[in-house]
Image 1 (cartoon, rainbow, N blue to C red):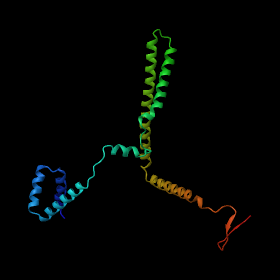
Image 2: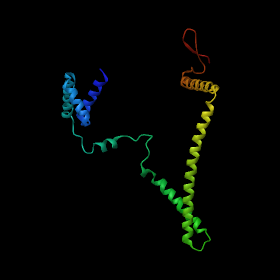
Image 3: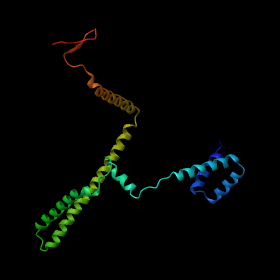
Image 4: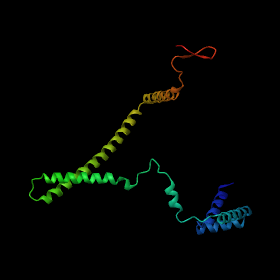
Length: 198
């Protein structure tokens, strides 16, 4: 089959879906007029489409909800936001109590301003901590990338890495085979029978 024939078959599929542009429809019509095999394949595709349409079952309205509800939660999925309510409540309680303690201990004359300033300070502390954590994480990844780039800049590093991987595999295999040892005090004679040395 040539590429033109493959393209025409693809257009036949798109024709059933209603996804052909006007120029493609004109080209397909011209190809169908001079190609008996292509007309036969179009007829077969239409029969198959009608057969599939007649065998289609209606989907119940709540089918998607029931399927999603019956699936177990995957380990990599994030938890539902409601499961974080206790952590958020404790965080708000901690922030509020910190602001109240700092505001109560303030020697300023206007008490409302002191509580507001203390709450803003605690909020700034949380924002600064989040930004510092994000910066530390980015710097750590950048440092790992630089270290790995420096490590693989020398050909001897590849040999060291290969030796490390082989040793790691040997350790893994020895751990897998660890349960196949014979017990203490039991020896195997030349004839294949076991006897107790004790």
